[in-house]
Length: 129
Length: 157
Image 1 (cartoon, one colour):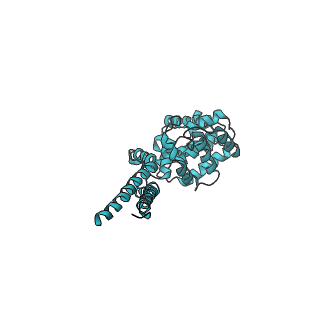
Image 2 (image 1 turned 180 degrees about the vertical axis):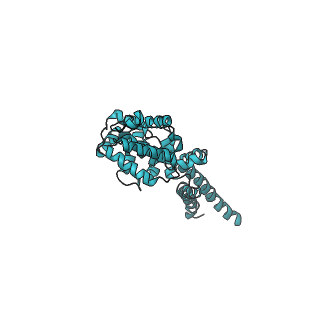
Image 3 (image 1 turned 90 degrees about the vertical axis):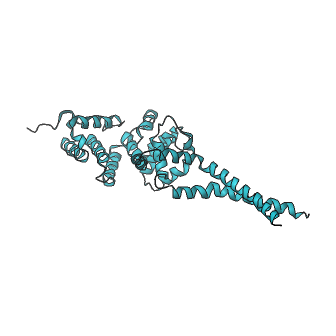
């Protein structure tokens, strides 16, 4: 038995583990989303969460970040800012916890008549589609 | 010789499959739950999901936006929504009528709401729908029912 033999046995296993994990976590979900039809798109997933009760966030919201970016990207200003405002008050990029200071900041940028906490808290419910 | 080769290939292959499953489960678990929840909806509900973000933006502008922001949003909604989306277009017309200060303008847009959604030709239903919109508006103008709905069109002497 030479010294190289244990290494010869180990490296294919390590390579198989790395390759398998990468394919499983990146390539398969991409293929699955390509074959999943038009109903399971970032727009549909964000739409689904927006429909949900804003006071009962779900753990699934943690995977929304990429979807939110995909929905936000094609929007022009000021719709993009309004979308950011909705995301902030609904806490969609924060596990359901509202980011009031960011929401107020966006609201003031939009120069809207009311940006107080009470109004933004009501927006949480009123923005539901 | 071949059995040694098979053993050498079998172990990495097993590890590859196991890693593939772990990677897929970790990355796709929450998305799979989304997919199942979306698949459980009816066809019309699934189709409506795609419009959700746009409606949320419009609702936010309606709730807190300035009059100028609301008018721009309503105009772009009327351009965007096809005639087949009758109830959505009717909602836009109702919002237009609520922020319009001119009774003639109010009459015209409420008539268009009725044309877009026949159920709103019934005055009581139109008032109910308009009240729902005024409650969803947190700033003026638009927090009160317009004169046209409260008392009809003013009499011209």
